[in-house]
Amino acid sequence: MTSFIPVTTSRLSEHIPLLDLLPTDNPVAWVRGGDGLVGWGVYARTTVSGPTRFADARHWWQEQLSKFEVTDSVHASGTGPILFTSFSFSAEDASVLVIPAVVVGLRNGKSWITWIGDGPQPTLPQRGPEFTSHTMNWQHESEIDQQWKERVSTAISRIEAGDVDKVVLAREINVTSDSAIDARKVLHKLSIEYPSTWNFAISDLVGATPELLMRLSHGMITSRVLAGTISKTGNDEKDLALAASLARSSKDLEEHEYAVRSVADAIAPFCKSTNVPESPFVLHLANVMHLATDVTGALVETLNKVDSFSVLEKLHPSAAVCGTPTTKASALINEIEGLARGRYAGPVGWIDAAGDGELGIALRCGQIQGSSIKLFAGCGIVAGSDPDRELAESQAKFAPMKSALS
Image (cartoon, rainbow, N blue to C red):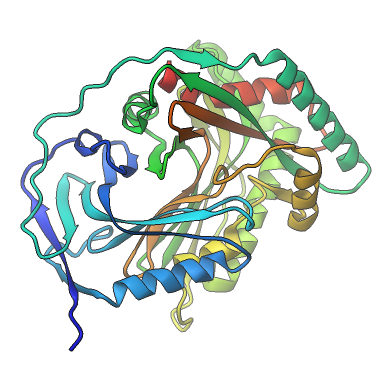
């Protein structure tokens, strides 16, 4: 006789800020504007890699689900057992899958708790954590800045030669601390300074991404595409003028069009209809502005087994983080970028038992390793790019994590 593992979801009457709930032990989070999911404890964890990593992740998740007996009195998106995922950019690197022992969710003023096991409902802390201060040691950047500009120049020459249309080049900064870096502290500061982004933490990858790769819910796919960036000055009048110049910039519009088309083409086989706006809007964040387009699609009802894993396999890597054509851009990245991205620029978020989920692209983030952290930023390079401008853009993209660590 098979013995199933109880999974229980109950509504909560109290509304404690989600990030205040996280303990130091294996915290995971996906929060935007206070709403989202957080979890802790590890019921199960695994890694997948290789060209079939999305299918392998689905298989592992389905195996875990087959062991559960679910009692869900809430029945909302994000209730029941939840898989937190952080996929690598490259198939060769390890992607991380985590099923927390406890998950707490909050959406539109309604909160709930899910726990695995036959124990009683876990008790939640009544106040947030207290953090200690750190002294951070920053890598000297002038030499690596020059090296990166040379790589950008190489990419531009290859684009002009017709080898590729667009390529996204990433760079990294290494930072050390006098004590272990607490992902929760980073999350708290990011959530305050960048509430309109998706704040995430999974297996020591922590950040605040403005780019939603995919939301799959009740047969609808949504993707927010960002490409084309300009720094803000803090002066409202000047920033309005800069926003207008961004919206007219042929270089940024070209970069954006490649990214939008790659997403629209990826989801089209799954959809009976798609909506791709003709022009992007300007998304204002605390430190930068982006050209943004929300692409949506309605799934074909007759398609079987279309879930988040299926869509991710087609969506990643999009032109926003790789380039176009994908194969040629990926080869150029491997040739000249000179770093291991790991899970930077990979899909990050959560998937539920029905295969629905919400996943962003792991941008504006860093990988913690004890008392050190590796920060990442990248820029889309096209024919009209300028190395000095791309360097300034990359520095603006480092700003959220630099501020969170300061």
